[in-house]
Length: 191
Image (tube, rainbow, N blue to C red; front, top):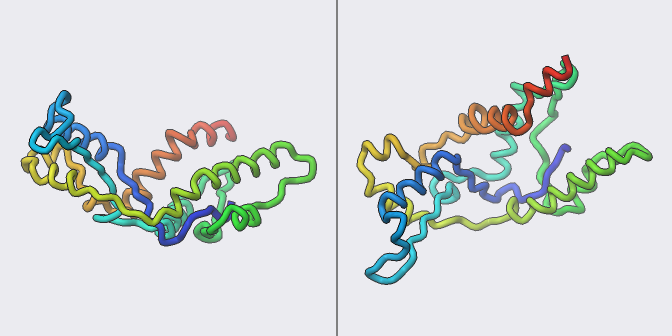
């Protein structure tokens, strides 16, 4: 695939899972597992953790980081690197995306299934990758401010400190390649 649908300026609200877990633990510690509402005004305590306001990253920036990673550490097939020519183009519609897919070889059921799966995935992700909203995380930020320095050091969830270039290239993509794509197992199978 040389493209994927979305909007180049949409904010990709990414939060590492360890920060999500730390925020959940902090909320439980603050309120207790049984307390669901704030008794002073009978309101439910809602904690949203997101990066869209305090450390935004656009879809275009994310695709550029993916490109830089795979350009410097390409995936291999049969010992040969898969080279990318540029970051993925961002298409604003499924029709535009579909037109960028290479047609499967005549009579290739696998090629046709792969094309259909790509269109299905693109259709699923388009609303999320075109979303222009931002999430209010003020309750979560207040929760973090109430934590001691020691608690913040051990159970931090401040998304402002995330260096996206480092996180995508050194944490996210290597983890995805190893644990989801099983890249090492595939590489060994081709030796």
